[in-house]
Picture (cartoon, rainbow, N blue to C red):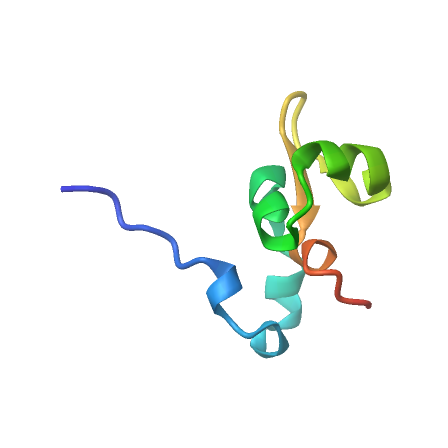
Length: 70
C-alpha cells in the first residue's frame, strides 16, 4: 500500500493559513514550486530568506515562499 500523500499547500487559500502554518519551514524544492522561482533563483536573489537546517538541507518559511508580508 503506498504512503499517504501530503495535501499540497498551493491548493489552499493563503488567507486561511494560520500564523503557525505560515511560519512552517518547507524544503527549497517546494518553495520553488509554490513561488515559480527556481532553486538557483532562491540562492541568487533571495539568499536572506534561506534557512540552513542541516549541513546539506536548506529550507524557506512558507510565508516567504508565498511572498506574504509580516
